[in-house]
Image (cartoon, rainbow, N blue to C red; front, side):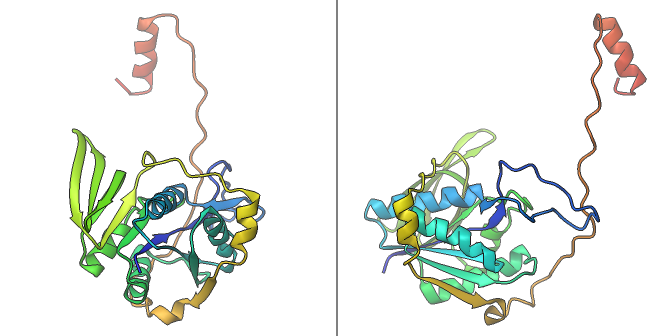
Length: 249
């Protein structure tokens, strides 16, 4: 079966103003709207479009996180994914551990393509796709803004400092996607109801023996400093004088 595997992460919705906990131990998530990481949602949309073009038979979505991440997986199923797998854990999982877990699932599911968002909007690591490709020993392309699949190859367009870069990769491969790739579809109520009947398997973190990967600990989380109030100047001379007083010129 021609299968595409897509990684999705549960994050604070991008429209929500993030608040730091009073003890500075992390970000407050109680009562906060959570959603699929926007980059991952774009990766899923691309996988669905590839399937709709008849180039894949199944789209599998995978998430690593708490039990509440089932909500985001159900949303992914409502968008059109066929199956979902939740690797359930309340611990913060490092990117290398995530890559190892994905690799174990790849060995089992044998996808011809793995699609990931280029980064998560909560930690901004942007490392999982590269690590997974190295562990899997398969080609990779990151920050893809266009994806074409044909004849066992993926032709990728990505934006670089000098313009656009086009790469051709042998499949299977790992791709991470950029915001410019597509516009995710709107989920309709009938699709949400149908998604409740689609298979969603829950596995434990211990099933993947990923504990040997280096872990990290968040020592402290602080909000950015408040923006200082601006001042009005009459002319260029007064502007230069103000900048000199601040040590900026």
